[in-house]
Amino acid sequence: MSAVQCLTFLFLSLLLQMATSATPLPLLRRPVHNHGNFAKNPRRNPVVLPVNQSRCDLFAGEWVRDETYPLYNVEECGGGMIDPGFDCQTYGRPDSDYLKFRWKPFNCDVPRFNGVKFLQEMSNKTIMFVGDSLGRNQWESLMCMISASAPHIHTHIIHEDPLSTFKILDYNVKVSFYRAPYLVHIDKIYGKTTLKLDEISVDASDIWRTADVLLFNTGHWWSHTGSLRGWEQIRTGGRNYEDMDRLVALRKGLRTWSNWVLRYINSPLTRVFFFSVSPTHYNPNEWTSRAKASTTTQGSKSCYGETTPFSGTTYPTSSYVDQKKVIDEVVKEMKSHVSLMDISMLSALRIDGHPSIYGGDISPSLKRNPNRSPDCSHWCLPGLPDTWNQLVYAALLY
Image 1 (spheres, one colour):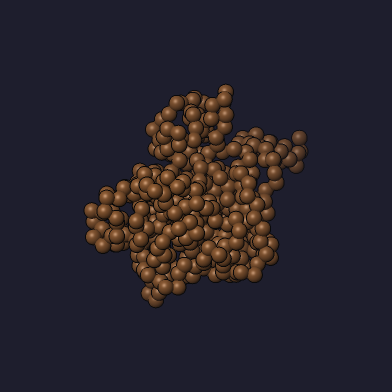
Image 2: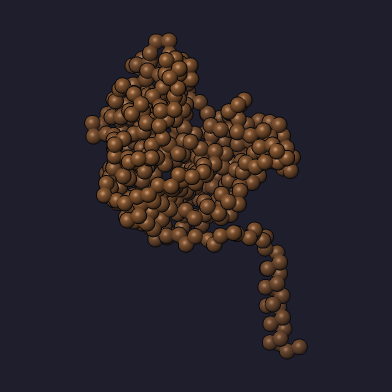
């Protein structure tokens, strides 16, 4: 055998070894989306910084009164944008001071949302919220912010399950919401609704991969019990369980999600955000003991009657603390692949921001008994989710 033949044989053998040793990826049912390149403008300064400041913590600050707020009115949103459950002003909320507060980080300024600038930057791109109804809350907020700030655009909304999409035709921008309360797959096994902690559905994976900006959230559904529980059994490691420690389940599900991101998402091309747990305010004992300036109604058993934010820059305690720790742990391990949007504390201060009894889906009997079962989980629109979106706007454009 000649020297050339030997070299050729060695080269072909090496190629064969590399091909057979690589872990095969599952066949994708749709082609990979040709994303716009965020790498051209990698991580710009996240916010408008004052002199002599090199960095900013967007999530440490205070709520300050601002008479130029809110960023939009319900009338500017257009038909079908706000769910009745979030539309507090239309459904009878008597106060409006809660709309007049702006989030102010301690050592920097968050730029005011500019819809035209946002659409120009996002031209030919898809922004997708993925998660539970808090993600839908935020999706509807962004639709309203865009519509009010760029009022002459031509739009179209498609409401479907699990994917709903708001199209801005002038800029070829899509703003979507994909309903996936647990992020991982839910399926039927022998007639039982099963939460599969080790799987993300192929359909979900294919759709998520079409986005240029992905904004994930999960949390509340992992602690539901009784009739609110969204499954009949849990499957992990090839076994089915009637139930298990919910924090263990959450961690397993998030590991599956993080592995999916690391495997399928090209971080220079696609921006990925994960939102920490949005707090609830069902227990006034969390805030009344220290909130001397609070306007809490005496004897209240919920957020009903709250009209101003909690007085202070930190909240004494909060719901979902253990869930937040798990989420922070998993997301921070991913480092540069995912931006953690730590909105829990700034949101916890907004004891005044929930629909309470002023949602269109609250029955007349509940309205007559406001402490019985109001909505102290979601947020009024306009309201707090507008701030979450302003922080995303700052992270993407500045």
